[in-house]
Image (cartoon, rainbow, N blue to C red; front, top):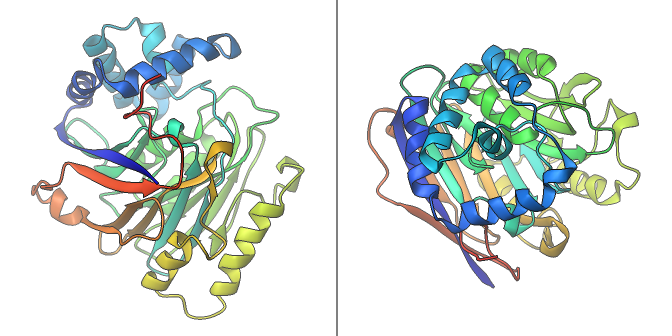
Length: 348
């Protein structure tokens, strides 16, 4: 078993100040060195058109431009380097799994990927310039792979396909923009229909009105369906699916079978996090191992979170944090049945 850790980051202030604070923590860190080495290997595979990215962010999330500027200033990066690292546009994205189950008042999500792809950062951020306060694990520092905002909007995404990609934002930046910009599922659906999508992903949404929807988003088309269960294939945009979907459908079947009975929060979390139920993934060397299980309760503004499987979750009272009380814990620790750790802990 490999011990892994996520750093807990809490910040209240402007986006630029948040960028500077994150740069201070990233300077000289294993995470930044690993990401820099990765981008150097991949730089010929994509191009970042900075004016285009800034124009899009100006339209949808202008404050994130300030955060990227703070990161650039703090890390002494050129604008081109900063947007390559943190712009969430044109970035390469590997294949992964992921599964989501929803109930009337909860969403539980397994994030599946290779450990080396994982930032190992869990952020609580309350902006003082614009945007809603948010919580959730990060991807590429500025992005969010799942999370909840102060209004009780919850978001998680599942990979579907990277083929036939087009110019657009990648999943984690889309998640960040949605959580900071939207108060409810309806607003999030409207925004997801507008945003340019680089790849095909399911975006599952839930809010305090108990409305859970899956947004099937590809670079060409966006459709909406109900979301009691969601894995790695589309139900409506079937032409966008991968050729092989057996594993995705098998995990969905496990979830749907469990939902044929009353599935409470505890039972749902165990369904997702237990390694012997058929949903939790263990193929860490093939970009398909469950790195975290996250549960979100929008009506209570609380979250459950655990790294790895077969573990009791940490209960996070986001509402208490929103009232000004910082958490006393600085790290979230767990274990993975994997050979490598997270990008924040290992050396190239």
